[in-house]
Image (tube, rainbow, N blue to C red; front, top):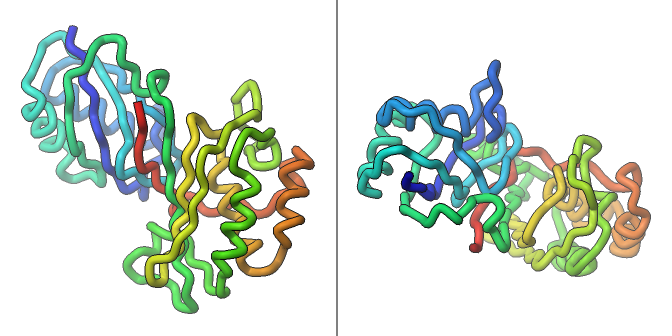
Length: 245
């Protein structure tokens, strides 16, 4: 039974997140339906990371098995045909060994959080970046972010519904840079807690605005108390960018 690895790009606007749900339109459910439409087979799609409602992806990885082997290009073309009216595109398909697992074989995941930093909101990217009108000091944001790099208990940055057995996470990288009016927060780690990136982004914005100090952010981390942390950044600014295997 061949196993197919997909690289997927999607606009999460209008979808109730990645995970299939009976009463809501999701990324997983939509792709699974497209695969069934061309193959006639019910399959289960496994992703490197489950994104929330409104979160986007430019390099999500997923895999599935089929009874029949198709050329890689044909899989890509066939799925995209049935996704032509959706905000989802298959960028690439590879046949992989059956030992490959999109989630459990991953060594590192990467996310990018996008902030539109200007006085006026965006007419074009209203659902693709968090609009913050106050001026942000990205040097202070980076200094604060550096305190988060390494192995820590990130209880202060996990959502109440997080099902991870431990809040101990090693954050490999947090890099902040500016491209015109966009401020990009790029983070890398083997795994993340529920809402962890959005909670970090929300706190770093508070530092950038001058509402909290760098020392305060360090205190929030050390407190291991979510109630001490800042706002959760909105989902529409978050992008799942890549996976390393």
